[in-house]
Length: 144
Image 1 (cartoon, helix red, strand yellow):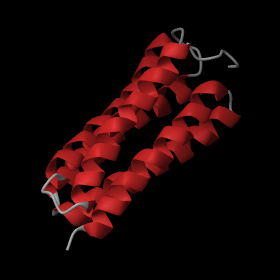
Image 2 (cartoon, rainbow, N blue to C red):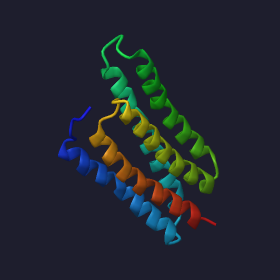
Image 3 (cartoon, one colour):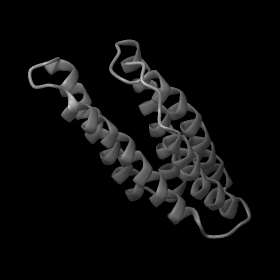
């Protein structure tokens, strides 16, 4: 898969970092924005899984049933991890979200090697994931 991403995808992806930056900045400034940051992080993590449901559903029936099964599993796991993160105290919950966002990008890197994820998506995904995970991690460290 070598399709390029529409410019709007890059713009919307970058805009999706703004809440991470603003909420993490609020946490670092001592404001009580950590619950909102955790909720946004869990929402984005679930969205990242949904990408794989879309890829699985776009696969022609009978083509790559193992790949389709793995995509469906990857589509569900991030939402479950996000839910668990919201049940944890804020500090470990934010840390789990940061790690899960990076782990999902890592798994997608393996999928890209097999031609299952567009390379252009992967480049954008890593840039956004590093920003999101950085904000979540900084906020987790800032909490006392």
